Image 1: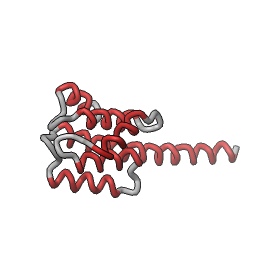
Image 2 (image 1 turned 120 degrees about the vertical axis):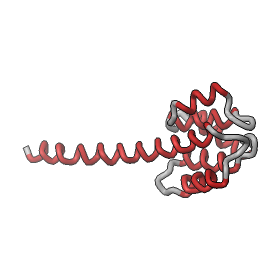
Image 3 (image 1 turned 90 degrees about the horizontal axis):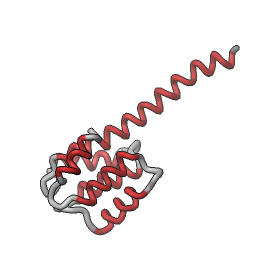
Amino acid sequence: MKRILSLLFVLPVVLFATLQVATAQESAISTMAGIVLHLNHYPSADEKKVLSGIAADTHATAGEKVLAGALARMQHSVGGADATALRALSADTHAGKNARVLADVLLGISHHPSDADKARLKSLL
């Protein structure tokens, strides 16, 4: 009986902690999706500050840090090491679906997202 009661106490705590982590991760993805949705050639100075905060966040996943860094350095399109890292993230089945979608969208941008990519981005908000 004590074991059941302790499980009933611990389970909600674990679920709540998991929900907070998931919400924080989705928040970073949503923030970046919003930036990309309105992107015109490259992020603004204020958006770069937000992206820098995501990249420096100790709770951000490795994928979120890759996304934030690549987006912050973007000039009309993503290239070089950032493109390589985004391709790896896009193909990583262990990464979150939304992170993979955002990586794929970033890889396809030339100056601004396409109408089809804007629809995909809206699903991440």
